[in-house]
Image 1 (spheres, helix red, strand yellow):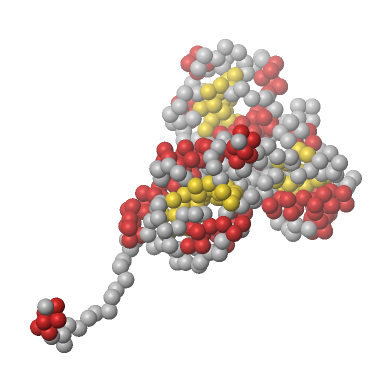
Image 2 (spheres, helix red, strand yellow; image 1 turned 120 degrees about the horizontal axis):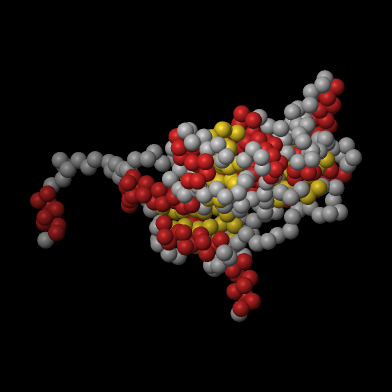
Length: 440
């Protein structure tokens, strides 16, 4: 019984899984520890796939990616990042879906998105084209701006991207800002500060580009602006603090390389990214794409519009949006449909006919689902999703073992429902006296 419960608890959750590549492949496994030294500081052209082990499209790509790596061995470097495990590295390069392929060429800090086919031949062709462009640029004297200081592992960056902060401008620039700030307190004579400077500058430039200015890096000369240093209890140099509007500053505890700083900045940025889109199930493509591209798809079946009106429906949708925002760092898709609009879907999830609103979480890879048993409220849904996140809760197989047929429907217009009009009945020819006699 205990073993059965253990298996059941793991059936829908994100378990520790092996990556898609091994040491015997020609694909270099990349992670936050080796990415800077292997890719950023390399003179080679790199093709890097950002993938998730659970992603069906990634699994389909894997054999082609291996074949391409074997064909390009010694010519172009081919790597892969498990972005499900190393999500900060994926976030650093704006990875929002899997697989994502990027070409790291002349300017390693501005990789290009690969938009070609998923066959080994298409990948090899794109790599060779990129290589030709790289060689042509070098012949023309272009370096791409990536000849960074190799000893420090950092980049030159643009010093203007590090905002100089003072006693006079700190409050209006940092504390009153809606952006997130990472602020270094330094002393000009400090050796560690001097070592950090090129890393901080390179990180500032990259973070500015990656976050579109939503996360900023600044620096305070604490020997000059002693009031600021005293206010924030600076006792040693360099000290880095994170400032978010309306919150107490927090100490930065990460590493001192460009990649470490950028990774933390991207984590801060992801805290402020918009939640995933909540979509109405209008056709088969919406359901298929969401459930196949995401780790889980969260589906709500809401009462008919005639039962709730627009205000009632909007209140349910608002609860879903709050939950999507709360769990936005998860790779989950969010969908809804009206009761009775997708009867095959309801039947496959054991929902149909009663108990609206209802919610199910579907794992399309395993064709397993779990149903919300508590209240359709922020508290009830949070408890349901939290249980799934830690591997608890009962699951069942999707009816038929596959995603059901989906009807194509019109989108909700945001208005109250209207009862269907009945044909007018003409009572002028009805003899009411005769009706009364019949009743008697």
